[in-house]
Amino acid sequence: MNSDTELAPAVQSILEAARERSGGKGVDVDARSFPDALADAEAAGRVPVIAEVKPTSPTADGTRDDDPVELAQSMVDGGATALSVLTEPTHFGGSPEALAQIREAVDVPVLRKDFVLDEAGMDVVEADLLLLIARFVDDLEGLIVAARERGFQPLVEVHDRDELETALEAGAEIIGVNNRDLGRLEVDLETFESVAPEVPADVTLIAESGISSPADVRRMREAGADALLVGSAIMDHGAGDSDVTENTRRLVEVESSNRDGDDMSDHDGDC
Image (tube, rainbow, N blue to C red; front, side, top):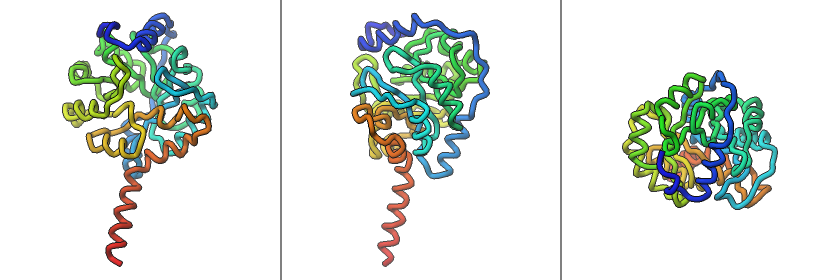
Protein backbone atom coordinates (compact mmCIF):
# COMPACT_ATOMS: atom_id res chain seq x y z
CA MET A 1 0.00 0.00 0.00
CA ASN A 2 1.25 3.46 -0.85
CA SER A 3 1.89 5.87 1.99
CA ASP A 4 -1.13 7.78 3.28
CA THR A 5 0.98 10.93 3.09
CA GLU A 6 0.57 10.79 -0.69
CA LEU A 7 -3.21 11.00 -0.37
CA ALA A 8 -5.57 13.95 -0.15
CA PRO A 9 -6.77 14.60 3.44
CA ALA A 10 -10.31 13.52 2.54
CA VAL A 11 -9.02 10.19 1.25
CA GLN A 12 -6.89 9.69 4.36
CA SER A 13 -10.00 10.25 6.46
CA ILE A 14 -11.94 7.69 4.39
CA LEU A 15 -9.23 5.10 4.88
CA GLU A 16 -9.04 5.72 8.61
CA ALA A 17 -12.79 5.19 8.86
CA ALA A 18 -12.52 1.99 6.79
CA ARG A 19 -9.89 0.58 9.15
CA GLU A 20 -12.18 1.17 12.11
CA ARG A 21 -15.21 -0.57 10.61
CA SER A 22 -15.70 -4.22 11.41
CA GLY A 23 -16.44 -6.95 8.89
CA GLY A 24 -19.24 -9.46 8.83
CA LYS A 25 -19.43 -13.22 9.28
CA GLY A 26 -19.03 -14.33 5.69
CA VAL A 27 -20.98 -14.20 2.44
CA ASP A 28 -21.69 -16.71 -0.32
CA VAL A 29 -22.72 -14.95 -3.52
CA ASP A 30 -24.60 -16.33 -6.50
CA ALA A 31 -23.41 -13.54 -8.79
CA ARG A 32 -25.10 -12.17 -11.87
CA SER A 33 -22.62 -12.30 -14.74
CA PHE A 34 -21.07 -8.93 -15.52
CA PRO A 35 -19.55 -10.09 -18.84
CA ASP A 36 -22.96 -11.34 -19.95
CA ALA A 37 -24.52 -8.01 -19.03
CA LEU A 38 -21.90 -6.17 -21.10
CA ALA A 39 -22.52 -8.43 -24.07
CA ASP A 40 -26.29 -7.89 -23.83
CA ALA A 41 -25.84 -4.11 -23.77
CA GLU A 42 -23.53 -4.14 -26.76
CA ALA A 43 -25.92 -6.38 -28.69
CA ALA A 44 -28.74 -3.93 -27.97
CA GLY A 45 -26.66 -0.97 -29.17
CA ARG A 46 -26.27 0.55 -25.71
CA VAL A 47 -23.06 1.90 -24.22
CA PRO A 48 -22.40 -0.27 -21.14
CA VAL A 49 -22.75 2.17 -18.26
CA ILE A 50 -22.36 1.27 -14.59
CA ALA A 51 -24.53 3.91 -12.95
CA GLU A 52 -23.60 4.77 -9.40
CA VAL A 53 -25.95 5.27 -6.48
CA LYS A 54 -23.89 7.77 -4.53
CA PRO A 55 -25.85 9.98 -2.11
CA THR A 56 -22.87 12.30 -1.66
CA SER A 57 -19.06 12.38 -1.66
CA PRO A 58 -16.20 14.64 -0.58
CA THR A 59 -16.10 16.02 -4.14
CA ALA A 60 -19.88 16.36 -4.67
CA ASP A 61 -21.70 19.70 -4.76
CA GLY A 62 -24.46 18.48 -2.48
CA THR A 63 -26.46 15.51 -1.25
CA ARG A 64 -29.37 13.59 -2.75
CA ASP A 65 -31.79 12.22 -0.19
CA ASP A 66 -33.91 10.27 -2.68
CA ASP A 67 -34.79 6.68 -1.85
CA PRO A 68 -31.79 4.61 -3.04
CA VAL A 69 -33.99 1.87 -4.49
CA GLU A 70 -36.00 4.39 -6.52
CA LEU A 71 -32.77 5.95 -7.79
CA ALA A 72 -31.43 2.54 -8.78
CA GLN A 73 -34.63 1.59 -10.58
CA SER A 74 -34.56 4.91 -12.43
CA MET A 75 -31.01 4.22 -13.59
CA VAL A 76 -32.01 0.79 -14.87
CA ASP A 77 -35.00 2.38 -16.62
CA GLY A 78 -32.49 4.68 -18.31
CA GLY A 79 -30.57 1.71 -19.67
CA ALA A 80 -27.82 1.15 -17.10
CA THR A 81 -26.03 -2.16 -17.68
CA ALA A 82 -25.03 -2.48 -14.02
CA LEU A 83 -25.17 -0.46 -10.83
CA SER A 84 -22.49 0.65 -8.42
CA VAL A 85 -23.67 1.20 -4.86
CA LEU A 86 -21.64 2.99 -2.22
CA THR A 87 -21.69 1.23 1.13
CA GLU A 88 -19.29 3.65 2.87
CA PRO A 89 -21.46 5.49 5.42
CA THR A 90 -19.34 8.33 6.80
CA HIS A 91 -18.19 10.17 3.69
CA PHE A 92 -20.57 8.90 0.99
CA GLY A 93 -23.84 8.36 2.82
CA GLY A 94 -24.04 4.74 1.74
CA SER A 95 -24.89 1.54 3.58
CA PRO A 96 -24.83 -2.24 3.10
CA GLU A 97 -28.57 -2.24 3.77
CA ALA A 98 -29.18 0.05 0.80
CA LEU A 99 -27.15 -2.23 -1.46
CA ALA A 100 -29.09 -5.30 -0.33
CA GLN A 101 -32.40 -3.56 -0.99
CA ILE A 102 -31.25 -2.35 -4.40
CA ARG A 103 -29.95 -5.75 -5.46
CA GLU A 104 -33.26 -7.33 -4.53
CA ALA A 105 -35.17 -4.73 -6.56
CA VAL A 106 -33.20 -4.85 -9.84
CA ASP A 107 -32.07 -7.59 -12.20
CA VAL A 108 -28.70 -6.14 -13.29
CA PRO A 109 -25.29 -6.83 -11.70
CA VAL A 110 -24.52 -4.68 -8.67
CA LEU A 111 -21.05 -3.56 -7.67
CA ARG A 112 -20.28 -2.94 -4.02
CA LYS A 113 -18.14 0.19 -4.00
CA ASP A 114 -16.30 0.69 -0.75
CA PHE A 115 -12.79 0.76 0.65
CA VAL A 116 -12.20 -2.93 1.27
CA LEU A 117 -8.78 -3.42 2.84
CA ASP A 118 -8.88 -7.07 3.93
CA GLU A 119 -10.96 -10.24 3.79
CA ALA A 120 -13.08 -9.24 6.77
CA GLY A 121 -14.15 -6.16 4.85
CA MET A 122 -15.66 -8.39 2.15
CA ASP A 123 -17.96 -10.18 4.56
CA VAL A 124 -20.53 -7.44 4.86
CA VAL A 125 -23.15 -7.80 2.14
CA GLU A 126 -23.74 -9.84 -1.01
CA ALA A 127 -23.02 -8.14 -4.32
CA ASP A 128 -22.20 -9.30 -7.82
CA LEU A 129 -18.97 -7.35 -8.11
CA LEU A 130 -16.61 -6.12 -5.42
CA LEU A 131 -14.26 -3.16 -5.73
CA LEU A 132 -10.61 -3.64 -4.74
CA ILE A 133 -8.41 -0.56 -5.03
CA ALA A 134 -4.86 -1.64 -5.87
CA ARG A 135 -3.33 1.38 -4.17
CA PHE A 136 -4.87 0.57 -0.80
CA VAL A 137 -4.18 -3.13 -0.26
CA ASP A 138 -1.05 -5.06 0.56
CA ASP A 139 -2.00 -8.51 -0.78
CA LEU A 140 -4.02 -7.84 -3.92
CA GLU A 141 -3.61 -11.36 -5.28
CA GLY A 142 -4.82 -12.88 -2.03
CA LEU A 143 -7.84 -10.59 -1.91
CA ILE A 144 -8.77 -11.38 -5.52
CA VAL A 145 -8.70 -15.08 -4.68
CA ALA A 146 -10.69 -14.52 -1.50
CA ALA A 147 -13.28 -12.46 -3.36
CA ARG A 148 -13.75 -15.15 -6.00
CA GLU A 149 -14.06 -17.83 -3.35
CA ARG A 150 -17.06 -15.92 -1.99
CA GLY A 151 -18.59 -15.64 -5.45
CA PHE A 152 -17.75 -12.00 -6.13
CA GLN A 153 -16.43 -10.79 -9.47
CA PRO A 154 -13.58 -8.53 -8.31
CA LEU A 155 -13.15 -5.20 -10.08
CA VAL A 156 -9.61 -3.98 -9.46
CA GLU A 157 -9.13 -0.22 -9.63
CA VAL A 158 -5.84 1.30 -10.81
CA HIS A 159 -4.65 4.80 -11.63
CA ASP A 160 -1.38 4.36 -13.48
CA ARG A 161 0.70 1.80 -15.38
CA ASP A 162 2.54 0.58 -12.28
CA GLU A 163 -0.74 -0.22 -10.55
CA LEU A 164 -1.98 -1.84 -13.75
CA GLU A 165 1.03 -4.14 -13.79
CA THR A 166 0.35 -5.05 -10.16
CA ALA A 167 -3.28 -5.80 -10.97
CA LEU A 168 -2.41 -7.99 -13.96
CA GLU A 169 0.21 -9.91 -12.02
CA ALA A 170 -2.39 -10.49 -9.30
CA GLY A 171 -4.75 -12.07 -11.82
CA ALA A 172 -7.30 -9.29 -12.28
CA GLU A 173 -9.78 -9.94 -15.09
CA ILE A 174 -11.89 -6.80 -14.65
CA ILE A 175 -9.92 -3.57 -14.28
CA GLY A 176 -11.12 -0.03 -13.76
CA VAL A 177 -8.90 2.95 -14.48
CA ASN A 178 -9.75 5.83 -12.16
CA ASN A 179 -9.25 9.18 -13.87
CA ARG A 180 -9.22 10.83 -10.45
CA ASP A 181 -5.86 11.32 -8.75
CA LEU A 182 -6.44 10.40 -5.10
CA GLY A 183 -3.50 12.54 -4.11
CA ARG A 184 -4.99 15.80 -5.36
CA LEU A 185 -8.55 14.72 -6.19
CA GLU A 186 -8.07 16.13 -9.69
CA VAL A 187 -9.63 14.42 -12.70
CA ASP A 188 -7.95 13.98 -16.07
CA LEU A 189 -9.42 11.76 -18.79
CA GLU A 190 -5.94 11.40 -20.27
CA THR A 191 -5.24 9.04 -17.38
CA PHE A 192 -7.41 6.37 -18.96
CA GLU A 193 -5.99 7.08 -22.39
CA SER A 194 -2.44 6.57 -21.12
CA VAL A 195 -3.16 3.30 -19.30
CA ALA A 196 -5.62 1.63 -21.67
CA PRO A 197 -3.11 0.67 -24.40
CA GLU A 198 -1.27 -1.52 -21.89
CA VAL A 199 -4.33 -3.58 -20.97
CA PRO A 200 -4.55 -7.04 -22.60
CA ALA A 201 -7.51 -7.61 -24.90
CA ASP A 202 -8.93 -10.38 -22.72
CA VAL A 203 -9.29 -8.04 -19.71
CA THR A 204 -12.56 -6.17 -19.26
CA LEU A 205 -11.65 -2.49 -19.03
CA ILE A 206 -13.73 0.17 -17.29
CA ALA A 207 -13.22 3.93 -17.36
CA GLU A 208 -14.03 5.57 -14.03
CA SER A 209 -14.55 9.19 -12.92
CA GLY A 210 -14.85 12.44 -14.83
CA ILE A 211 -17.28 11.17 -17.46
CA SER A 212 -20.02 13.78 -17.63
CA SER A 213 -21.07 14.26 -21.25
CA PRO A 214 -21.72 12.29 -24.44
CA ALA A 215 -18.40 13.63 -25.74
CA ASP A 216 -16.64 12.08 -22.73
CA VAL A 217 -18.40 8.78 -23.40
CA ARG A 218 -17.21 8.76 -27.01
CA ARG A 219 -13.70 9.69 -25.93
CA MET A 220 -13.41 6.87 -23.41
CA ARG A 221 -14.94 4.32 -25.77
CA GLU A 222 -12.56 5.30 -28.54
CA ALA A 223 -9.69 4.85 -26.07
CA GLY A 224 -10.77 1.27 -25.40
CA ALA A 225 -13.31 1.33 -22.55
CA ASP A 226 -15.56 -1.73 -22.46
CA ALA A 227 -17.76 0.04 -19.91
CA LEU A 228 -17.99 3.34 -18.06
CA LEU A 229 -18.61 3.89 -14.37
CA VAL A 230 -20.52 7.15 -13.90
CA GLY A 231 -21.62 8.64 -10.61
CA SER A 232 -21.87 12.40 -10.24
CA ALA A 233 -23.07 13.15 -13.77
CA ILE A 234 -26.03 10.83 -13.24
CA MET A 235 -26.78 11.70 -9.62
CA ASP A 236 -26.31 15.44 -10.32
CA HIS A 237 -25.91 16.33 -6.64
CA GLY A 238 -26.19 20.04 -7.35
CA ALA A 239 -29.76 19.64 -8.59
CA GLY A 240 -31.84 17.55 -6.22
CA ASP A 241 -34.68 17.10 -8.71
CA SER A 242 -32.52 16.14 -11.68
CA ASP A 243 -33.96 13.31 -13.80
CA VAL A 244 -31.73 10.32 -13.09
CA THR A 245 -33.35 8.23 -15.81
CA GLU A 246 -32.69 10.85 -18.47
CA ASN A 247 -29.17 11.50 -17.13
CA THR A 248 -28.44 7.81 -17.61
CA ARG A 249 -30.13 7.55 -20.99
CA ARG A 250 -28.19 10.42 -22.57
CA LEU A 251 -24.93 8.57 -21.89
CA VAL A 252 -26.17 5.07 -22.67
CA GLU A 253 -27.62 6.02 -26.04
CA VAL A 254 -24.64 7.97 -27.40
CA GLU A 255 -23.59 5.35 -29.92
CA SER A 256 -27.11 4.48 -31.09
CA SER A 257 -27.75 8.21 -31.54
CA ASN A 258 -24.58 8.46 -33.61
CA ARG A 259 -25.74 5.60 -35.82
CA ASP A 260 -29.18 7.16 -36.22
CA GLY A 261 -27.51 10.41 -37.18
CA ASP A 262 -25.31 8.65 -39.72
CA ASP A 263 -28.33 6.89 -41.17
CA MET A 264 -30.21 10.16 -41.44
CA SER A 265 -27.22 11.85 -43.11
CA ASP A 266 -27.02 9.05 -45.65
CA HIS A 267 -30.74 9.29 -46.35
CA ASP A 268 -30.61 13.05 -46.76
CA GLY A 269 -27.75 12.69 -49.21
CA ASP A 270 -29.83 10.37 -51.39
CA CYS A 271 -32.73 12.79 -51.67
